[in-house]
Image 1 (tube, helix red, strand yellow):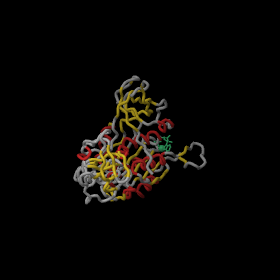
Image 2 (image 1 turned 60 degrees about the vertical axis):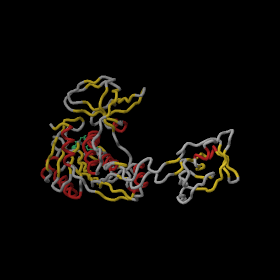
Image 3 (image 1 turned 135 degrees about the horizontal axis):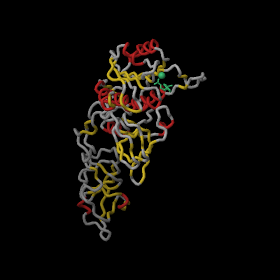
Image 4 (image 1 turned 90 degrees about the vertical axis):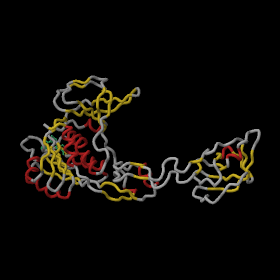
Length: 409
Ligand code: AMP
Ligand code: MG
């Protein structure tokens, strides 16, 4: 059986970049930059004031003290946005200067307004100023030509702010894949419909489409089919050419009605792996369609479907989007309770996070069977148990992965 690590490597190797597009910044949240963001301007762009106060030549007030006050004429007032490049302080002059306003020529410090007595066109100083005081120097943060954010970074609110701050109204970002989710199962009824005996409500399409949206900000197409080979093939072929990723749920295993894999092989999907030594997720299928779409067959159990999506499908989607980091990073946490289990497959146990005494604890949830659905909604982390391990004690440091569901508008 394919190991989880092999499976992930095979999936990522099959991903082809989708190309790029230009997006207005107000629509680029969550997208991934297609190129390094190189600054065009120095930051700050010009010397400006860090406070509301008075720009001075520091030598003019070098001897000022409470006992020996120094009075300077206020020759100018500069607001943020004013062009102060032509103004020049003469000896004995100061300029009222607001936060963000340009420093007038000749001035080399700003004294905050709270420390100055200002009346009748004069400013009275009761202490000296060091050179450069309260002056934000041009280029002190970065220079034109500096690297601000690397290619593949996600457009967060602050990354968008940086891009806008360099004068760009648009960002060049990776395209997002067109994804279809096909749920299989003759026992499935749509939420809202009456349940016939033996039926259950279908919940994977909403979960998997929401998971796609949380990664890409775009909707996936949801389709459903009964456990029928002809129907399954028809549905698949009706959308495969127009998709970058097709995700099946259910019918991936070895049951008599598990028809997804054979149907996909007949439809010209080239199998890359089937069955992975992981729990949940043993029956996972992965292949590539002749039209280029990556095709995943996930198990139907809602927990298995969501966990395998997170661990194997999400990395592929993120790589397609141009993300610099696409696989889950393992983070260490202290195990909150002992785990006993049958060794054999690498296991991902649902857990909640607790911070205590400055340490991060992962508390495994009680109900870990694949069909037990309630825990995943509470879980924010998966505890990773290596295939040969049969027991982990409370207090041991273990690898975990964070569940990164996030809500994208
Ligand atoms: P399967 O992988 O098709 O054998 O399905 C495994 C289990 O998950 C069965 O108990 C199914 O009834 C259930 N299941 C399959 N698909 C869904 C779905 N879309 N929503 C909820 N449960 C499902
Ligand atoms: Mg089924």
